[in-house]
Length: 274
Image 1: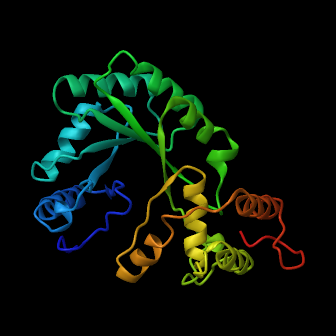
Image 2 (image 1 turned 120 degrees about the horizontal axis):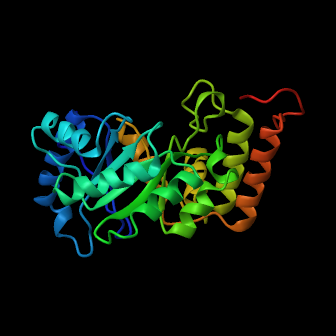
């Protein structure tokens, strides 16, 4: 919880920081202030880090009330982007709640949604079309080599069609299908394939399984959301940028995912690891 940390500005891209609690929001807004006075902020073309907060809105609560409660708990710190999570509320009603909160100055003009499928996302975006001051920046969904549900159910295609970005939560997978080799239950067969591809696509540099799996997510057009307190892991994740897997490598990984989803392990048969 030390705000005196750092981020790397890579290829003039944005650094998007998630704050899942009011205390994290307060901390990350403090960090934004420190960053603005750092040497990194003076570099040509560098963009400041952007902080977003996930706010749960239930059917009995307004967006305005949820945002005001978050900001009050964060001692007045306000997110740059508001990410709305709601499993039960109607998408159109949520959009109308966003408009009402924005008109009162309680909500930023840039919003996002958490875990919306294609139909719900389209309804939400459509309901906001008459309010040009509000932009839907991204849809936050779980996506990795271990879980491609939001690709196979058409959500990623809908995001592209609607001009909504996608942030991938859990981009290294979960449980026994995780591709982080430090995890006790990582998918060993998949990791060996990732290591092989890392040697083929690295341009003379061996890319780690973690870097290849993150690059797969980015090559699909998603922004991976990484959660770590380890500086070494942050640097390793940074090594997944500034290059892309080619179509052949992506096709090989897609085939591997499809095989596992059908129950194959890649180790000569038997039940899948997940």
